[in-house]
Length: 589
Ligand code: ASP
Image (cartoon, rainbow, N blue to C red; front, top):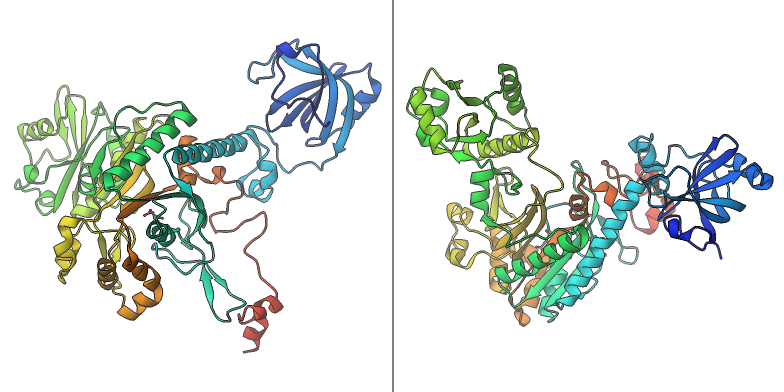
């Protein structure tokens, strides 16, 4: 037997027992005539102590380096100086025997709670980084989440069904990763961007509650914190309306909050429309941990000769509570901040509601009474600071939304241990793209238009189509979109119309999607579903910004696995076998 206990297990109640542990040497320390070892495994750290009387053990311990794998036998004794920071901190093991199971070369960085290793080197030695407690906690959380998801969904009747990875392209708006087929020269599989069409076919097949914790692949230009392969909790249900789906998955989210984080979320999650989200938060994924809603004050402030406002399509204001004391310098800095390209405003107008009167950057154009009336209208009080942006409506709503988040950060209102989930509903069905002069599906082409907008959906006027809303919804947590789904089209005629609206020719739609259009002719039930970004969900539960720590072997932001050094070249023979032009041949040409 390699071990009787783990390194996280022994307590004061074990004193007197003779135990055997196995693990990695985190550190050896000499103090006087004693040598101490911190022995680590997945479960924790236990202190071992070798005294000079046991010469054989002591000599061996003195030779040991960091990360050696050893087996240690000894007696559990009470520690002289206790360490309340670790669970085994009241005891130590007085060594009787030590066996080296494997020596180790010195690792390139320290393997402790806080390491001295930079990101690149840790990625290269991911297996060493994974020995560190923060990563271990992240993966434990992920395991727990997956376990709870399976538990909850199975308990309410869902079946986990696997779908293939080598498929035909499913459009989700990103590029596909493709895999050449050796047996079918010149043809390619695509890796799924999501199992969207398969889960819908499962509904046609009668599996009315499906889920899968599944890998998805999207060949996107990697923005910060995206992974080319990522995991979804993918779900679909039949004979449901939107409310049934939202209620089911609200139940799942609540169970996760409760069982993973020990947090009870009371009441229903708020549901707001996309239009309201844009108007009040300037974002389709509002962070509602704090209020500071945006106010439209366009008509209130026009007609006073301030041309910036008079010519603006939109003027929006937020109230920063208690910030009237902002100095000139702070306001100048904030003005520069909103002018950054990522925010995109041209300038910032402020009104300070000082106890000794109102002070603003537009005093020339408005009387204090007028400004006070605006303040009253938007609920600003003495001591508050009003910040305003103006210009083109869509752009400035977005910019003000970004400023709102920034003020939330500055005021410490975005606490990662507070969770504020909500649903955003009724997204537009289509998005017009000026460049390609065509519509794109805002969610994906299988999302149903709202029944009341069906007439407009069949209209050929662009303005009508722009107004069609989708029966789609997003699950948003703390300003991050964690899930999204929709009620689907289940009528082959409507599905065909959708492809037509998206600019596919009949032949093209048949070639790409014939299988699903056809399936809908064989008795497709009304259905809908949702998918959650599992990596993101985990990182939010862990209170961390980045998803990378919640993935055992992630890629870097160039889409590379730096540990494997992938992607990599393949040899010419392999290229030829796959009917790809070999590099050699390319060079010959
Ligand atoms: N397949 C969709 C996605 O990946 C989710 C859904 O509509 O269920 O975003």
